[in-house]
Image (tube, rainbow, N blue to C red; front, side, top):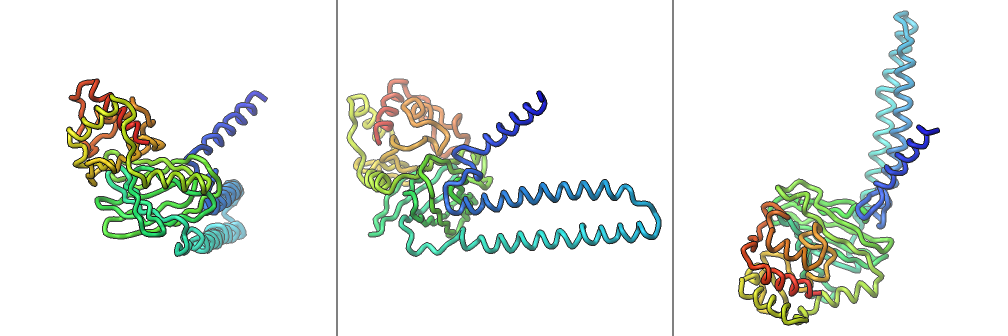
Length: 327
Ligand code: CUA
């Protein structure tokens, strides 16, 4: 019974590992649910096939070299080795083909439109409102529950792949092409997205936060994103703002409502209110801001942003406080 208990514990642990914010097996979207169904059927089928194959292999060891045995072996090879796989693979192909329209529905009447550009190694995100207003942000996707969101995906450098495992299928972002993806979340929660195509040194550090909200909360959030940045709340944060502008951070980053209007790097207008920093790899707090600014390449090797580790600690802290206050 000790061994059985251990086996059970291992099973529970293995299943627990399938839970969490980035799991295809605890779906939170229409597409992800269908993909999970297919996965379970394939898993069950694979178990059955494995048992049958092992059984046949054991059975085959008992064959002799007589004429009767040779005929049985030939039947076995044709039946189990050719006919059966053809039937199973054809069935899976038909299933997959029928799933495609579900995973890629027409997006004409989508409630939310989002453009995402994959770059080494972050995500430029632009929400487009029904009246055509464009709201820039970065490294974060929030969606209203129960409504379809249409994504337009591009890349200016190399191939990336946009994937929120909990919500649906993944889609490549290919330079020179526009790809589309529809996601329809079925429950609220915080999830995680990631780049699913190797794209260079920091590919594994190219992630993003995802939150599915009630529609009213989503509208509030989007209204906040559309608004200009709020003023610094303390003298130290105000000094951080001065430093931000004096160091030329605005050449690459925009903070709407200030002279900083760069478009090379992520828009920072509401960076302090995001789920994560550094494209899904750091918590969002002043210490993480200071670490990112001072040790950029320790945190994300080969990132385009130059590190500012030469700054006095007090300056770093003021900058971090300012950015953390941009909620
Ligand atoms: Cu972008 Cu991997």
